[in-house]
Image 1 (tube, rainbow, N blue to C red):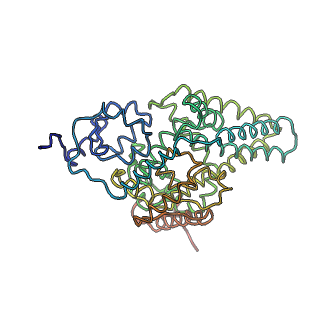
Image 2 (cartoon, rainbow, N blue to C red; image 1 turned 45 degrees about the vertical axis):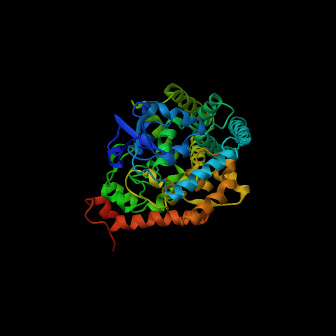
Image 3 (cartoon, rainbow, N blue to C red; image 1 turned 135 degrees about the vertical axis):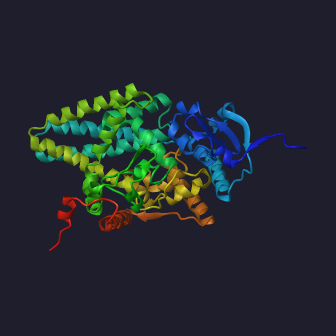
Length: 447
């Protein structure tokens, strides 16, 4: 009996990758998600990055089983010609099904409620210490506690952006606003926008915003060619100032991390003031206004400017530990140029991530980032189960001769600094990419 299905070639599918003509393939069926991209909960960017190709593994990673029933209304009636599934993808999908059968995606534990209680205690302790104590050392300790509070609230914000950490979506949204916008001053809308792009295009130099930190840092000499950021839609100019800063980035890394919070504040405000569509923008702006009301007010109650400056500096420096942690998972891992490829989803996620070795009693410190490989492969999985699935992921990597990258916290720091140093030394000897200026000549004059 003749096959009555209609097929399109891979080449033809690749022509449908524009915002006004956006098709994807999931398990060999072709879907037109052009209109849906404007309503997609994860934003249009993940769909655009995977447009015109197979996106099955990414779809499985990011969507619960209930999402499959909604695909039919986007079905074009076409099937992908010669659709094949690699052995790695087959095993990855089987593993996802097994975890689902085990109920791991639904069992969230009580960690969030416990952590919210701890955050509340930390907050009121800081307020009490500032308002009711006159000792300088107490005020500085409160600054440190504030930084620790931001770190822990960051873990909840991160988790709630990937899956529902509370009993329902409304409470989950409330947890996001409280821990992200109101307590930490970080827009959850901004975080979702950048973080979804990061997960989809893990360690792509031009598509992953988490590697685009010029003029302060570059992890690869490919940035010296002033590549164009597909995320920001502009050229990342490697000019003389950037060259100067990058040339010493292995020395400035930790000092900059101490104040990296400022960048998150700025990025959140810039996004919310822009014309870009942000879901629940009114809520986002209100939450940021709450933060910029209570935090400066609390600081103003300190007795003098010295203590106010030190309080802010200490709180920023402590939370800088989290910013270092973010960098350790990716800076020293493999990078590439170009859009993500849905056909090597598993490989790109494992190549671009680094796990941190630690004992189970230290899991609170890393917030799930210690199992970055597992998190990138199964982003909807509650972090309380990441240690459980680690042996399965490790075995799958071993079966297919893929690297399962892991290092101790100190080794990961050394690897990150070595990566930055390598790029820095290449920037110093670069002769033709940018014109030298007087500042550069002065800094590099010897004798």
